[in-house]
Image 1 (cartoon, helix red, strand yellow):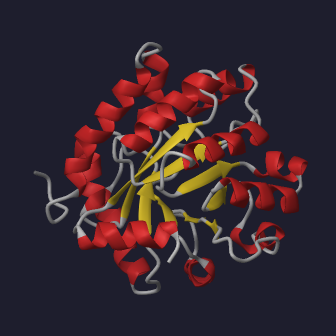
Image 2 (cartoon, helix red, strand yellow):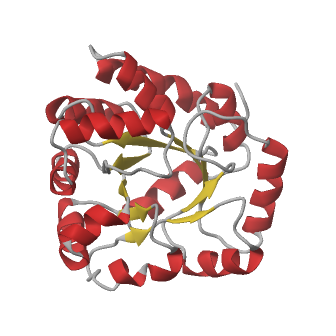
Image 3 (cartoon, helix red, strand yellow):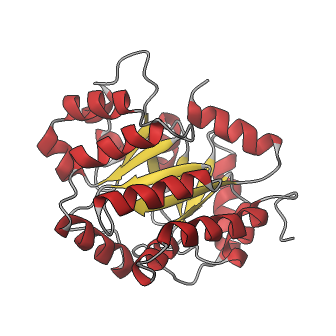
Length: 269
């Protein structure tokens, strides 16, 4: 059983959703980024999505765009992001997913990327702009004994036929986009998302995790009542941006404050 499977088995047994955090590698600098990530992992984050900054982050809102710009100015690269995975793996056992656009991976080379990421201890990759149908460009390079998942996205605009095909090929977990648009805080129609989750559960047993626009304890509670995992990104990056001093402690405290909203029968305490 790989780390992702173990994590979702644990959260199911604990009757709660997994708390999944996205943070940009290298923001605001390499060493400070490691300290923030280390603190986040130690505070009880269930899954880490480690964002690889890219110069044209078309799926991201302004908060994560600014984080990517800061990280790139600090010299962050895909190679250094993989090294962060290696350093974190020496201290933590939670699943780590690399979150990237395809350009940095293609520049490194798919085969080299998979080999180095898996060896460093990454559990998979989510490539925002690589369609599910093209995932074999990366996944054909995965070799045993490494367990390495390609995390697939389903958006509100995904048509039912394509949705079924995506679900058939999914493992690890499925990233269910809560609304149209880019990442960041925004209004979520929870009735519509709930209906979508019910439909998806009829077609797959792979864990379903909700992201985009989740920022508050109320959002976490609402998502946790219908999902296997809750994905938060911009709310973390906003705190990193606004608190250049003692950021690790602030992020750790935020994580601890949110986790209680995923538990206790997935109801708001």
